Image (cartoon, one colour):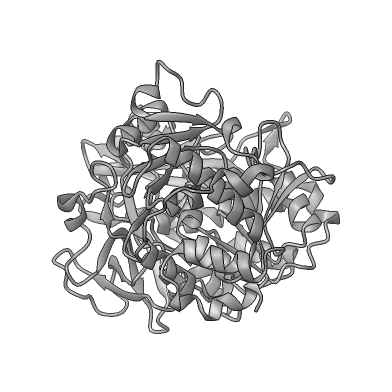
Amino acid sequence: MTVRQIAGRSGSRGTVVDVLRAAAEKDPEAEAYVEMATPGSSAVVARATDGKRRLTFGQWDAAAEAVAGQLAERVVHRGDVVCLLLPSSIDYAVCYQAAARLGAVTSGLNLRLGLAEKRAILGRLRPKVTVADTGLVDAGELAHSAGTVLARTELTPLATSGTAGGGVRQPALHDDDPVCVVWTSGSTGVPKGAVFDHRNLQAVAAGTDVLSRPGDRRLSPLPFAHVGYMTRQWDEIAHGITTVVTPHPWSAESAIALMAGERVTVGQGVPTQWALVLRHPDLNGADLSALRIAGTGGARVPVELVRQMRRRLRCPVVVRYTSTETSLGTGTQPDDPEEVVCGSVGRPVPGVELTVVDENGAIVPAGEVGRVRLRSAAVMRGYAGTGAGIDRPATDSVLDAAGWLTTGDMGWIGPDGNLRLVGRASEMYIRGGYNVYPSEVETVLRSHPAVKEVAVVGVGDPVLGEIGVAFVVPAEVPGRSAGGSQTGPTLDELRQWSVRQLADYKAPDRLVSLAELPLTAMGKVDLAQLRQMAAAGLGEQLSATTKGNR
């Protein structure tokens, strides 16, 4: 039996530790990880001759055993929390598996989070050990809440892993043991931690659908602290997938080089990353013929972006939608027509149920907008309280006794069964008594030839209650420049463009031109920062008289 056959038998295995041990036994030489060799990277595996570090499933299992011994020496027990302040790397994967062997719970912190966010997370988790790169845990900033700090450079090298973990008493593990805490992006407030157990990870493996095939080589561009990695180790191991890690910080140049050089079969990235890949000149000569599929999601996906991806990458493109708390959600299929791929987020993936409800929790008729609810075995156990315990009041506010998770997203289900999102409930604003969903307005504005990127937010207004502010990155359009400077569209042009397709009250009331849109740590548009800018009154605005007549 090879590791590629474990997928069919993984249902009989209780934990993600069991699945890796089986993979290491059956096909130890199969490649699990590839990463670029950078200064300070990968203390557990030697440098490769081609400038990359590689880890087989057999090596991964042995290294995890060794690091488990190091964690045990620092008195890590069942239920304790181990935090990782590490970039996406082989070391991260090894530490995650090592903690799981001790029944400990792993939580990664996105390195781009602010100091206050890191403090809040560490203060809630109270980790027993934090594994970190040198300098990331400063004694005066985070060390007091990080527990015992284990430097990345102290991790046991793979060459000694045959004995380093020997003799460590490991507890009996159960499929309902919590295994990880994944933090939301925090774009609308303090991040929340979603707790997942081994059964959740197994359910994710069963629902990855077209993005997982035995023997895939899959590009991993997101931070490993993201739900897109933390809940997918079972899937990667059981399917014998090679994870190709992009360097930190991410760049389009390195992503293209890795996809070509490592014969990547599954390309992944948020819309911002794919847009940068498509603009990079290296894409023109890159051999990406190994790509069988490209996936995107995690933010609004412009129609034109999907079209360009299909044309330039020469492979099917699928869109995926989920939330941190649900881990699985909906997705389009490779053979879906363009209008479905470009205009929806697809149908529920295997094992997932979907409904759309009103503010009272009643299911709304097809075609009507409501709040999206999802149910599956992949849904989190709950939000983290102290340590890896469950914060019951916070959890009960989104997860009911029947297992339905009410997301913060608004959408509607078409007659074809595909989900169309209109925006976050928190993003909706009410202009003169009418509900406006920014996503709908952005889709129209993005089709304007002078608009490269756009984001719309609502801001308070004394006359209409709230108005819409459009933040636009102008496109380079011949004939629109004066004296060599780019001017971009005017507010009046955007309003006229909008009312051709939307009700007049949905047209933006204010325009702010930017060189680029600010992004959060997860690569999404930073709406909180844009709202602050909007509240400051920046940009071209309609007169009060004009507004009052609308």
